[in-house]
Amino acid sequence: MTFEIPAAEPKPEELARECRAAAGNAVEWVRSMTGIELDFSPPSLIILDKVLEQVVRTLTDDDREPVIVLFGSYLGEVLLDACGGRWETGDVFTGPGIRGLYGKEITINPFTRVRQSLKNMEQNHLAVYWNSVIDRINESSPIDDPVGFSPPPDTPLKKLPVANGGGHVEGPSDAELGKTIPEETKQFIKILRKDLGVELDYTKESLKFLDHYLRSVNDKIPQDGSMGKERMFVYLAGNYLGEVLRREYGGKWVYNDEFQTTGLVLEKDGHEMTIFPHNAAAKMAMRYKDDSVIKYARKVARDLDKKK
Image 1: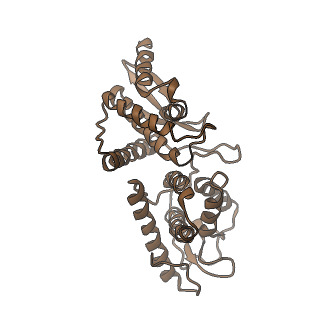
Image 2 (image 1 turned 120 degrees about the vertical axis):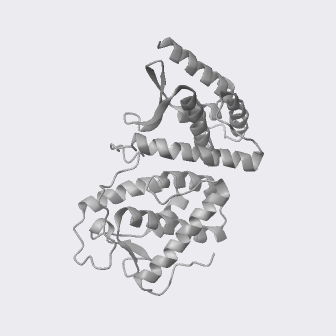
Image 3 (image 1 turned 45 degrees about the vertical axis):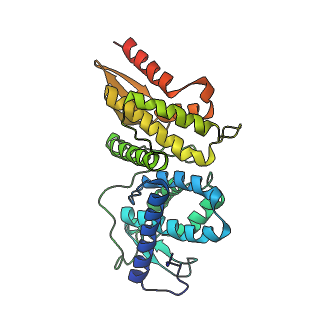
């Protein structure tokens, strides 16, 4: 990797080019490692958290700083795309940072946040950080001289669906979920095609492979139930399970505000039923002997028939 955090103070436009290039390298790195395409949107930070949870345990001391540069740049670019502002260096930063988000007098250092995340992912999720930045923006005063800063967007900022100090968090819209989850599922299919030579086709018969897949994941999960680096792939398996059932019965992905999690509303003969495929996949990955994907799909079918 050629990009390094500059020791000097380059012009903002030069710094912006270097950080954007590093963020692009981060996107390419995630694509090559997982098949997942990060798109510089705030919801992509939820995906990035899952990626970092998977890779953090594999990092050597030599890997850590380059990863901080890559994903600190990506986090910064997500904030700039969504909020306006610009990259700067100065006394308030250790290395480059961002100032002027949403036209407010606020300064942050995304590299420091990523460094904290690598030390303790559970306490320093990037999606939670996004929500805290929104709070800081709402509490900050307008910047005195906005010349040279990217202007803030016309759309209001929206928090991500993550637990944040027990407070209420507004979740993604149905339209956002309807776009994000099918795309993530396509990437999951590509991963399995590339790594295992398996072609999933969204049929109920293909769920038999998820049985084998989650059984293999179950063998890798410690007895305490912590999924560790398997968490992201269990999440993607939940995506695929849900997409198969959604295509079979019709329906849509929704965010359940009460439980702050994603659900799937299925429809059959004018009746609706909400299920939680991600929770089901996690349960089967941790306690596979008690359940299976095929049994789960059959139970969903029976429950839908009862609603006629």
